[in-house]
Image: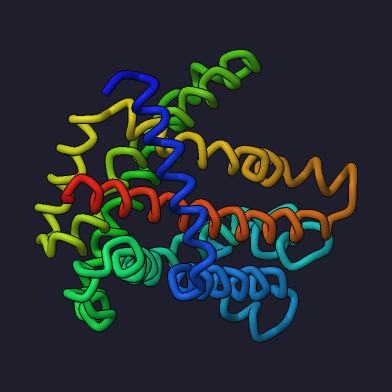
Length: 279
């Protein structure tokens, strides 16, 4: 395919995925996952309550001396809320994200390819939940290593140079998109082709190597929607100082909605891509 054909294919995949929002069952798993994130956010925002304080204290204490005390007072709670919520989201994703993607893959298979979809049952995903958790753990570890490890390695080089920091931030986002592009086919392949874990990773890497630019842009366009949210939450102290502390909570709520949309659209696009190629 030439560039125009690839672009048209990309747009068509997005459109098909977006149209799938019309099928309630298809996005129900990600809706439940988003509601779980919402509950975690409410728990994090209620840290000043004795019950939730006891529950969250070990997690907050890991962030450094005095952080738990700072988080328990207004407006420190809202300054630290994005970081604490991110920790909760990681735990949640390790347990539930893989199965949410797996269930969505099967429901979309039934919508895109009814004949093939009949071969799959929802119970099949639940039977492979431990393996899906392991896949999520591997991918999350790699993302964590990139998102936190790489900046730590270059902290001395970046210190005192706003221009270097800005350029490095762009480079880091490109690296994250590439990693996402490499692994985006893993769970769909794991479910659709009933592969073993290592075979699913190998398939995803092989597919990325076959179509690196297509995979990159498939991920990049939805990922761009997350940048305003991540920018504002990374500067929660500025939001608290210049506006109202509670605005941080609303930004994080918006982020949950954006993640829900992106997760569904990307999963839908990949499932449609794989089923189309099979046909």
